[in-house]
Image 1 (cartoon, rainbow, N blue to C red):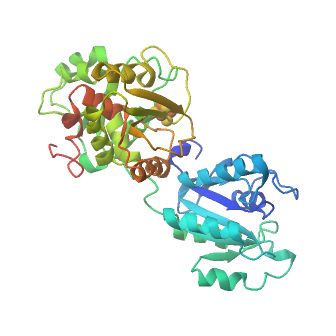
Image 2 (cartoon, rainbow, N blue to C red; image 1 turned 120 degrees about the vertical axis):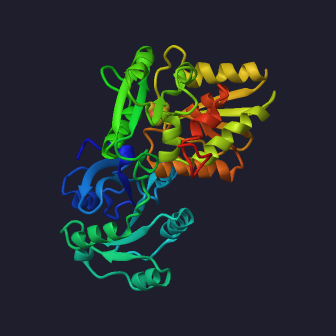
Image 3 (cartoon, protein in one colour; image 1 turned 90 degrees about the vertical axis):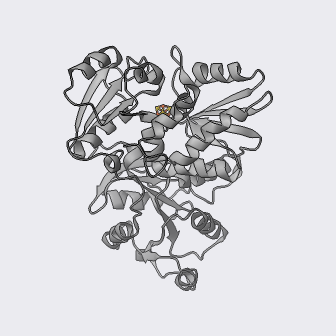
Length: 404
Ligand code: SF4
């Protein structure tokens, strides 16, 4: 169970006012003491993540958040953090103390959840401690909000809550397969893993590992080679591969060995489909040609790392942009905090987002669209830079041209 990366798990966010019993609920749902439980309001300051398995759903991560009613300077930052968790939430639980009526905090939260189309369950907690506040249930009914009454402390109603979660779980929280739709059983996929300084020591990168798994699950064959062995591997094959997948950095050198009649793509393109929206990201790359002096470009990475050698985000992409036009203004952000104001950017170039779940990547794409800002990802940018954009998307019939 713990082998499933967080980014591939359905994300269940637990929200509510301080002291509504969110931490007790997460402990009760997971059956473990993960979150610190205390009667002192505001005990949960930073979101707490717990990976677990829910029967009929599979691997999920439950996220305990700080109170949506926190106050003061630091408290407001915690509220913002809790709301940011909504960007990655596939199903939201709003915990309400049974003694309280729906207040502005809940109403604002419900509005926000509805605007994002996230399934919601209101969890009326602490029913072991007295009556439910008059009017609370009828107001939820009036607002057509799915609710359930529980005692997280006494574990009452938790089994039913799990069933409700299963019933409401969106089945598109992840694209079911990276490649299944374009492969047939027994197809051969050739993967080129570069000698990459950024690869984790002794391991392949996450997208490579997940793609191998996906190819095997599709009853296909996969051959993995390093770039220097590519030519030999091709010569040794009796039949050509159905698809060649390479890291974006070595796309142009790999392409020299791959005849035009063999489909060629990159892990970044696969991930643009798997986690995001290939069409939007490809359209974003086409905007590169419209950049000019004074255009502001945001380079966004979803996690922080130490730049090594010819780092794509710090060296390769800025170098290319500078060669296209002097005076393009390049800014960088890294980590889970995506800027809330995208005004004034002419283009966002995002990393592959392998550590983000699909909802969060789609949230970022949707956010860019709301600001009418084109967005692309590193690999698609590099394909455009090498004049190979059409070729690397050609394999994906529905989204782009057909050729496989
Ligand atoms: S999330 Fe982005 S920055 Fe982090 S490892 Fe994946 S591609 Fe690199």
